[in-house]
Structure formats: C-alpha cells, structure tokens
Length: 287
Image (cartoon, rainbow, N blue to C red; front, side):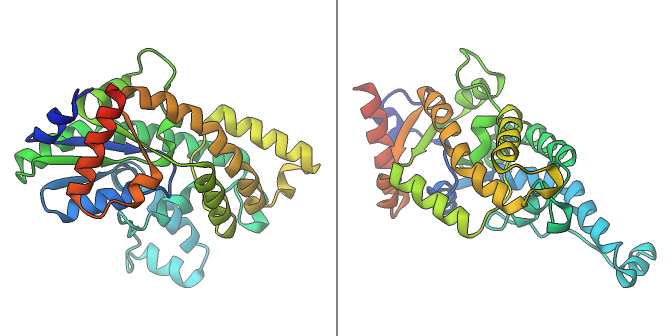
C-alpha cells in the first residue's frame, strides 16, 4: 500500500486516497468534507465522465429531444438557443438520464441494443476517468498548491476492472497513486439502499455479462417481450441483484487497500476524525 503503517499515514505531507463502494454510503460526503477543509483536491470520477467524456453525448441527447418540439427545433436550427448539461458534483442527473433504462419506448425506455451501446460508452469513459486521476493529483499540486487528494469513485468501479486478477491495469495504477479505501455497508445498509432505490429508481452502469443475464432472466420470469418491459420495474428488479453481484468484487478490491465500515464513517465529523479512522484501518489491516 502507499502508506504501509498508521504512523506513516498520519505523518504523510501529501495524503492521497480513493473511496470506493456502493453509492449512498458516504463517499461523496467524505470527499466534500475534505474539499471544504481547503487543502484537499476533490476529484469526482462521475463528474469527469459526465463532462470530459460523455458531455457531448449528453448534450446531443437533449438536442435530439428538443428537435421534436417545433418551437425549439426552429430556434436550434437558427442557433438562437444553446442547450448544455448543467452537471455538478452533487447533481449527476444528466449522466443518469443519458444512460436511460431498457424497455418499452412508450414508457420512456430504450431499445436494449441502444441501452447496451450507451452502457459501453460509460464503461470506456469510466476507465479513462479513473486513469486520469494521476494527472489530477499532479494538477492539484502544480497549479493550485493543494497537497492532499481525494478521488470520489462511482459505485460501478468494480464493474470496469477485474478485481480477482493478480494484475489489472486500472487497479494497478490506482493502487500505485492512492490508498484505496472501501466503505463497507452492512446488510441493513443494503436493505435501505434497495428501499431508497425502489422509491426513485435511477439508471446506473452494470457489467455487460451480468446485465445480459438479468435482461433474459427478467423477461423469462415475467413472460414479457422486449417492448413490453416496464423500464422502472426492470431496474428495480435488477438493483438488489446488482448489489449482491458487486459485493465480492468490492471485497476483492479491498485487498489492495483498507476497509472502513459505513457505521464508522457515519461518526466522522471532521477531516481529523477521518485521518484517525484511516490510521485505525491501516493498523487493523497490519494486525
């Protein structure tokens, strides 16, 4: 690991960490808190995906919908209006909206082949955004003079790498540059995330093999053709299975770093609290 002992971590003049785990367990909360301290550079992988790598695709999708409205079509064709994504660290809805949901087009769904095409765009973008973290570590120091760096990764990081392989080009690069920290949730956290998702299902990225199996299994179980699938019902059905699919992948990634329990993260109030908690996690791993 980048910091082999708790004392080495606490004394490090330049701390560099990457948080990973299920969405909703505190990654962005911690990263935002550190950024607010003034000496941490906050790098959001999802924000980088939605601006640098998929920003044009997202904007074109907005324009495609606007062209269906005669009034807006005329304004677009005459360059009288400008349409762009207003994505932020806290609001990633433009990216989710572009990914979409498979199913009946009359219910707002996408054809499965189009849905898979967008999923693949996200996969390539996420890999690139993760590998960009090294550039932003240097950028934060060289341009802004900010010593510390926090990478806020997306929940799908475990889907775009091979955590079980002895070597993986993305994980190898991340492990070299940062201390990888898994925020591990309990069964109770998983149940709450499923309930939260059920209330407001949102698009997300899935591993292609997993998604293809889920799409087939769902339609067989429900006895539906592709154009009969309710998009929201499908992603609700898939979500809990996706969390179970991801758990061993996160656990395998954690061998390259340390683990914080979500209950521990919930008690963090200050950057110093977090520094001490990470030191405890390093000591725990050493033991």
